[in-house]
Image (cartoon, rainbow, N blue to C red):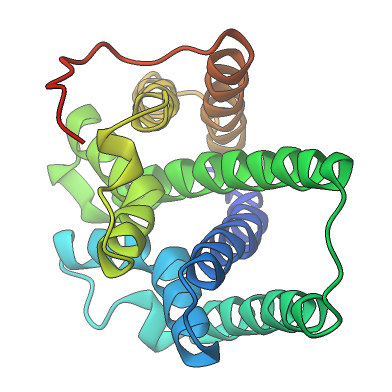
Amino acid sequence: MEQTAFFIPLMDLIGTIAFALSGAVLAIGRDMDIFGVNILAIVTATGGGMIRDTLIGKFPPVMFRNPFYVLISSITANCCFVFFFFKARRKVAIPDNMVRVYAKVFFWFDTLGLAAFSVDGVYAGLSVGRHKSVFLLTFLGVMTGVGGGVLRDLLANQMPVILTRNIYACASIAGALVMAFCLEGGIERNTAILAGFFTVILIRCMAHRFKWNLPKVTSGRR
């Protein structure tokens, strides 16, 4: 019997915390109250998995059968809210150098979350049996990786980030493809997971370092 992928629970936890922070920070920036902060954090952290489970017919989705990750998302969101709440109450200005540090930390959390959920989605696709293919596994990986962020942006009334800038979804596609091809090639699951995970991180880091963006036509409208 093939070895169980023991990295998956760790990937789930990393992705949940990272994307919950992403949703919470955006909600605070949009002046939402504590309820809105929690909703956006939970949707960002679990929305991609919910879309994935719906696509493969897993009902109810995992987030409802195992609310552990919803709880982790909520705890993360409330910790984030309390931090910014007391900063605002004390009228403490965050120094410019700290803003840069926060931006770097946020980038790494977001990158780790994308990588973790991309490989998690591919792994979940293995449960569909004989119907699975490289295309299906890759699609599920990408939906899990970026789906929560799309829902987050729509709820925050802004254009989804993956449609406007950054090599983001492309990194998820590449990582999911690498993992899917590794699995199809008979490579051991944990090795395939690590290959896909680090592919996403590598592409995101290179895009960030060299300011890569996909080409687009500028309409001139604002």
